[in-house]
Image (cartoon, rainbow, N blue to C red; front, side, top):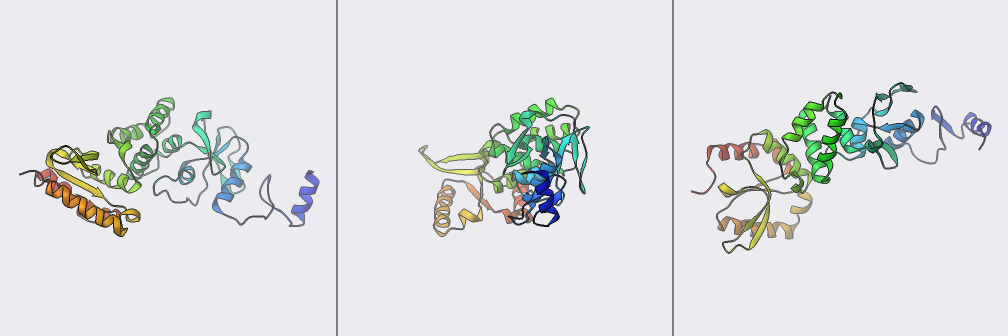
Length: 279
């Protein structure tokens, strides 16, 4: 289609030009993702959604949709499109970018690296733990990028977060488990095991517990409402936990809502005082 035809249709208000070089045909409703795609297009062929915007695209745990659209271009290029100020970077490898929902963006590991400065520590820890749960190669990629970009601010902070991850973080089964385990670490809980296989006196498997302190015979079960509130599942949980109790295990059950109560701090205090465990 000729530039003249496009100009004529925009002038007639049949189409609009929300950003320089981006034509809206008016065929779809305006959405956050549509606005983002328009900004990436307007920023040029080497432009990627990044930072909090990429975190939301990749569905980082509890990452809210940001009001500001973060788009990164290489340093030395234009830094403004319309009213939007772009981010810049001196280095962004071909293996550090991908697409999410059809929009060019930084990969999860590079996104976390970009967020290492300006993001509160607990949020950063939550992102890293959940991404490690979802992708077995995530931590390796993240560490490789911190070595590649030694001058990026926040690198040391991010490595400290990785160092505090449980060695078996890949066994975390759900987002709520990430949040609970993160809180246990923050509270200074004694070393624990994830996805611990409980066996009966004959060695037969009984149940795989979410978190365990095997030397103390203490188990922590993390119940997500979507599954564990089903009636048949509740009955099965009750039978299984009664059996574990009969085998000498102390079982504590927590939910996401308990993150705002004294349940976990109380459990950690009793563990540290030696109040829980075999007589």
